[in-house]
Amino acid sequence: MSNTVFQQYPILFVTGTDTEVGKTFVSCKLIESANKQKRVVFPFKPISAGTGEYTVNGKSQIVNEDAFKLWQASDGKFELEDINPIVFDEPIAPHIAAKRSLRCLSLDLLDQHWQQTQNAIQHQVDNILVEGAGGWLLPLNDDELLSDWVAQQKLPVLLVVGIRLGCLNHAMLTAQAVTASGCKLAGWVANFVEPETQVARENVNFLNQKLKKLYGIDCVMEVGFDSTHN
Image 1 (cartoon, helix red, strand yellow):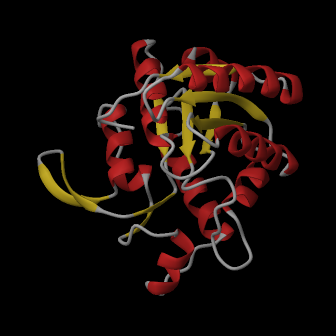
Image 2 (spheres, rainbow, N blue to C red):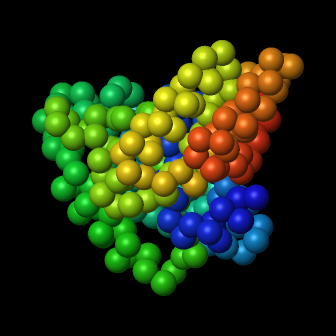
């Protein structure tokens, strides 16, 4: 299914109904599936917050965990600095981390890194997967949102829904906000962040019907519960 999504959308923006709903886990699954189809997908996570020590190409580096996982999923084909150009050490809201570290976080900065990325990987990849941070309406600063940038770039949006209590409201609110921003919903992913139950299955069935009716989108992938990742 992921290969079909990548065939239809050369560039895809992955957002979630909230933080910690499995955006990176799902993104890695999509990339790994594409790898099996011999498609080269560049993972771009423009903003991250929170760092740790990881081994990259045999050397210890301080990097963001999500960016590291995206790098691993893409078989280390790309430089981590290209995958994740804007990194804050504190695992807090990026706009707050930017203020605390006296750094700028803006639409202009995102544009700059986006252009550099496109120039660097031009003609080398089949697809670009852009992973957001937090939820859809993530602040960049007091006036700008990450969703503003996605809308400016006219990127199609894949919505990751963490299947748990409250997900129906979160999913429909996020889908509404995405379309209100002028962006196209490319589909959604059901990520079971808790062990599957009959109620969880009914939630997925409801979202399948409701999101199809309201926005004409399908569930492109279901990801079963994995206690080591979710």
